[in-house]
Structures are given as C-alpha cells and as structure tokens.
Image 1 (cartoon, rainbow, N blue to C red):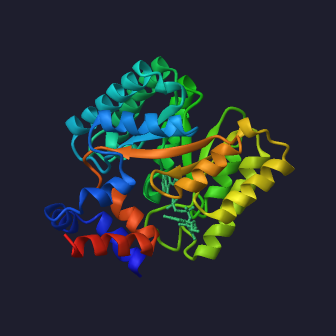
Image 2 (tube, rainbow, N blue to C red):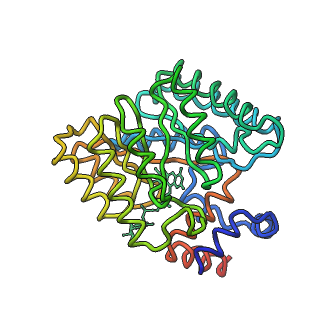
Amino acid sequence: MLRSALLAASRSPQVRTVVEKFPPTHAIVERFVAGERLEQAVAATDELVATGRTVTLDHLGEDTRDAAQAADTALAYEHLLTALKETGLAASAEVSVKLSAVGQFLPVDGEKIALENARRICQAAADAGTTVTLDMEDHTTTDSTLSIARELREDFPWLGVVLQAYLRRTEADCRDLATKGSRVRLCKGAYKEPESVAFQGKQEVDLAYVRALKVLMGGEGYPMIASHDPNMIKIAGQLAEWNNRGRDSFEYQMLYGIRPEEQLRLAGEGNTMRVYLPYGQEWYGYFMRRLAERPANLVFFLRAMATR
Ligand code: FDA
C-alpha cells in the first residue's frame, strides 16, 4: 500500500511540486545522490574507486518531454565522460542512461531522438574507453528500450541493458540476451506495475530473480547482479561456482549509499563491485523510488523533515 502510494507520488507532478517546495535536507538526498554538480560526482567516484569499488554514473533525469532538454542531457553525459577520461577514472567508471531522459517519450520521433542521443553518449564512452548501460523504466518502455539497445549494439557491442526480474517476460528476455559479449544488469524492478505483466509479492519476485539469474549465470554473457538482498548475493555466488565462472566473468552492483559495508566486503573478496552513483538536480523520481523500497528510508526521511 505504502509502496504503491510512494511510487504513484514519484510520477505525480503535483506531489513533486510540493516536495520540491519543501525539499528534504541535503543530508537526506546526499545519502542516495552524490551531489548536483559534475565535480561532486567525479569526487565521489574517486573516493569509491580508491576503496576498490567500480562505479556507474547516472546523470539524474527522466520522463523528458522537451527535445532541447533531451539534447542537454546527452551533452551532460558527454561532459561527464570527458571528465572521467581526463581524470583517469574511465578505467573504473562507466555510465547508466535512462532513455526517457534523452527523448524516448517525446510525442514526435521520440524513439528516433532517444536513439540518436544514446548513440552520442555511446560514442563519447567509446572515446573515453568505457561503457554504457541502459536503465530499464516501466514496462511500457521495455520493447522500445530493448530494440534501441539491439540497434546500438551493432556499433557498440559492449552496451549493457537492465532487465527487471519482476516482469513475467524477463526469464525469456534473459534467454535471448545470455549470449557472448552481452552485459545484462539484473535487478528486481522499482516501478509500480500491474499484475498482468509483473509478479507482485516479494517471494514471487525473489523466485523470479533466481530463475533469471540461473539463465544468465548459465549463459555466455556477463551478468551484473544488481541487488542488496543477502539471499540473492549468496545464490549468485553459488551459481558462479556451479557454472565455473571466474570472478572476472560477472559482477555485483548496488546503489550509492546502500549497504556500503557489504559493498566493501564483496570488493575485498576480489569481486568486481560496482556502485550506481546518481548525481544532478533531477533527484525527485529517483529519491521517491528509494523511499518506496524500504520503510526504514521513509522513517529516516520523515524524522529529518520533522526536525527541520
Ligand atoms: P529488496 O528491496 O527486496 O531488499 C531485499 C533485502 O536487501 C532487504 O530485506 C535487506 O536485507 C537488504 N536491503 C535492501 N535495502 C537495504 C538498505 N537500504 N539497507 C540495508 N539493507 C538493505 N530498478 C529498475 O526498475 N530499473 C533499473 O534500471 C534499475 N537499476 C538498478 C541498478 C542497480 C545497480 C541497482 C542495485 C538497482 C537498480 N534498480 C533498478 C532498483 C531495483 O529494481 C530495486 O528496486 C532495488 O535494488 C531494491 O531491490 P533489492 O534487490 O535490493 O531487494
């Protein structure tokens, strides 16, 4: 119930206006977001890399309805990738992109514009010597995102894509994508989805995650296990062993600010541990989804608001 309400709020312009009028303190947003500026994102990346972790940076933004803003987002990624190259961080840091932030939802030629903008970002990543992963948004975008990913992979075969275990279709998508060179980030899924397309309960979603993970770990691609769930992490380790996968043939991923000790433990054991690091001014949707995931986050938020 609470999760549904928060996820609905994450897409409501009215609630957004209210929350942005009374923004949470910096300390709360900073728990999940590296900062608003590029330099802050680069500094946070540097700190994570210094502790043995790798990074994927997300320039916050989504649901863009304006072509100029979509182009600006692509430009922001180009600047970010140049900075990663110049600081030497590109060896340890890639970028994550939401296609809706680069034009996918534009009423005219949305997909075409998103493809062109994503292509610019991929080219900048190639020039910097790093990679790009496409985030996955709500289920209405899955086909479009996978089709854009297919097209981009012809020129940028290292392009990664996210699949969401809660979608009923995902096990089949994993089978399609568990091929040589293919990078798939498997997460549980963070949007409010109808029962017709998505498993609803935690147990059902967890089981679906394990089924999808089995396909990816048994395949020839490079699975990226994006979860904070101790059970999923344990099962991933076992599946790696059963499939004789070396530590360089898969990686763990977690969100910035969530379970940092576990991140360090996994990295300390010699695993690739990648932290998803968001930065920028458009923190609202991302922040609300994090609150929806975990009641403890909401309590933390409300307590801080009450003591402002
Ligand atoms: P879940 O939320 O079920 O938590 C399971 C357990 O993990 C908890 O019981 C607890 O033990 C532990 N845990 C979770 N949060 C914790 C916390 N804050 N502190 C301590 N323990 C905690 N979604 C999407 O729809 N599209 C996308 O593109 C992406 N991209 C993405 C990238 C990366 C790198 C990650 C890690 C996640 C995403 N997500 C996403 C979000 C994802 O779908 C999901 O909502 C969250 O990761 C939460 O799911 P968990 O797998 O962590 O399990």
